[in-house]
Length: 481
Image 1 (tube, rainbow, N blue to C red):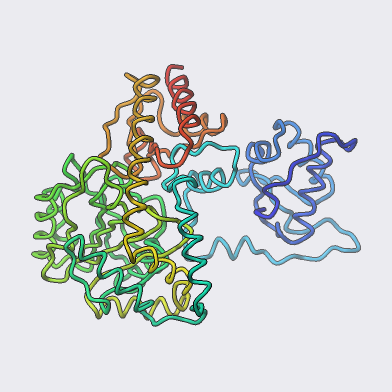
Image 2: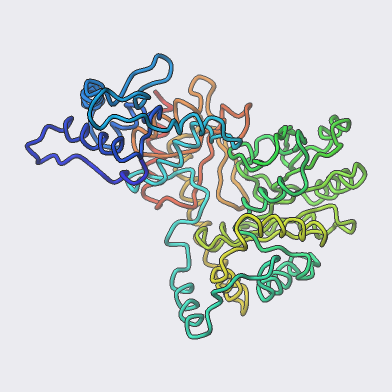
């Protein structure tokens, strides 16, 4: 029903609201958008989408059931009838729902699906979103660079399997500033860090492989390993990051496994792995032959002090695959990132990428190259850090004013997130649902790990400060209830 997200009933029409809604939903069915056996959205979701009360939705659905278009199935909600009522235009539709259920890629968690839907609603204040606010994206700079590119021959063809040589050279220079030595031949350009994880899962993981990761972890909120059935093994954290001593308890499970970590401004906890802990983790992985996936997309978003050097910068044995991106710092819509690793590995991943999308957009790569060249990216980062400092302070002050004694949190040194613990009597799930009803979206901790039901991920990066302050005030009021 994506194409109808903006539709609303006409409150001034003489046609009753429930009949307008019934007609709209009927159109979705008769056009084939909702096929036989499809489960339609929940009544509460439809009521929120159309801006009406739930009883109006119930009346509209009953009308469609009377027409033989919908049926209620115990335990399965309301679905489009598999066998339409008899009539001159009756025909048996293909049961797409059965195909969907057999698909090998798992669906998102219901909460993540709800978050994705709510983020598309401009009326919702996004208090958990992990991206820069529109006003922090350097639109003017990008437009000027596009203008310069337009005066040159546009790169309209496919790039090399590893990506644009010019961009890979710029990335190589950029990474040298972190202490990472990486020739262009060891760099693969990807369409964001998420694609890097997909390619790694398809290219180097075997069926049933174990993925060690921090608990909590962003990786729990997505299915980034679609090609294989993996086992996620969460390792506890402390103030210095992933606890290597607890990782050693799993030594018998290392065969064919990998370790995934976000050492700088961790998502969702905001923790920065200390320098000694990074060295300890690299030693452990080297001794056990455990490939290390270092996701460093938040590195440049430091606010108080730069994080320690990347693990990759200390890795003389080539055991680390390093993932970077411009999505968190420049523009999520650019869809440009990179994987750095041993040449045979990046060539393997490049071969899979060529089989899936034939390369990241050439125009996006050209634009990314322009951004990284000439100091423009560094200038942009100065402004972003300045604005994120202001936003972090605003959220901290709002939390202290409205949630002191009701939530537990610490101040992150950078990145986007405040990881807040809620009282056991409240729980993140009901708070998530009640806040969403009031027009405020935050991310419940349980999507980041099975043991994180007492946490919320709050982001100071996206919502305007006045909206952020209103949302935190509302959160405090709900906690007091």
